[in-house]
Image (cartoon, rainbow, N blue to C red; front, side):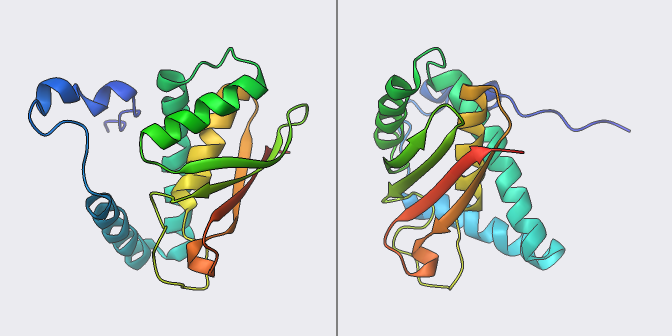
Length: 171
């Protein structure tokens, strides 16, 4: 039986060649259409917990690849953070702010405003950004060399107007 291929950044293709007129931009609703319809199918097929887990795992792979190809992992922590903030803002992912950080043990609390995944969505009573959890864990895992976890504490889905995450070394 053939093994599925591992995701690699190169699979994203050469956007300049492939979209010479349309470029790199698309509307947020188009991104969310893919994300929410995929979540719907996964939840119906496998259940909500499995869907959340799959989104987290996909986010983690994406975060690791994003860090490898877009970030300077050699920067000291307090130089890495502004670089990450600028990248996330420039790419329209969101506005990252650090609330608390302890770089010695890699425990970070941060917020992302105007989050690509959920800002403006209806209140559901649940956190929605499982992909973002994985994405952030993947970025900080790639940067730190330690296995990382991330948990969303607040979200538009829970009635907050910002997403708040706790990122920490996995024990």
